[in-house]
Length: 320
Image: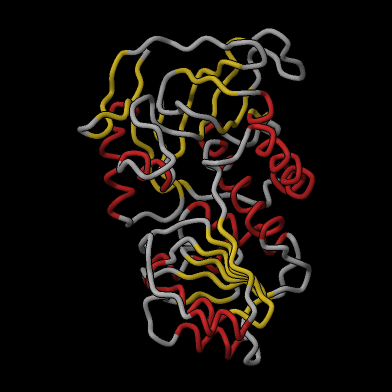
């Protein structure tokens, strides 16, 4: 089969052996795969990512075969999945990570945009971030696919105020179409002051930070006393200065999350919690991520460069 393989020269489309589902696994004929920032980190050799192998961790398609002991799924089912080796014509995952695409109204391309964002942002906002109905929530880096869905999740869970940030004027203007009550430029020196103005001087209850780096201290300033900051990404840099005194004065919980060090059992619990809160909204089409551009599998390298150039709004796909 064709697959985009991580090499020392970047992603290269190669002929590789088609995977076979083991006991408790399913084989999916891939229709589309979603690109995520973590895929760029894998190419760059970031800690926690194994070198080599087929890229990608989010895909949709039809089940082609079932491993021994799999129940609740059938050959031919349309599914959206998380799992490794997504940039290929076939991929294997476990049933907990393979969710039936609701109804016939959602295309497989649209389905490929959702899995990573659903489990990542529900975990960040609801579980780690402990969001409660009536909270004010800020999403840093809100024009990414994960950020766009995060704003909708916060609204769905009852946030009274949702603020999204983007440094790109055109993308920032679209945030209010996807749940933001207010859109800010996090590269502006007064963005944290605007958050304070919008919250009667208190700051937001929760920040989900996909940027970090240079925004860290302004995040502290923009978060209320006893608020929470959940770090899910580092688009703006892996390191930065931290005002320890401001952190202490505001008594903020700073929480780091990643799926790289989670077991399959932990991921299954995260997925169950997400489905309990959000699956009705998914089935009703109440949450969605726009597709910015789709590339054929053979252009996986170009697709990654397009993501790296950071000019997209929403999701980039590879189609098999």
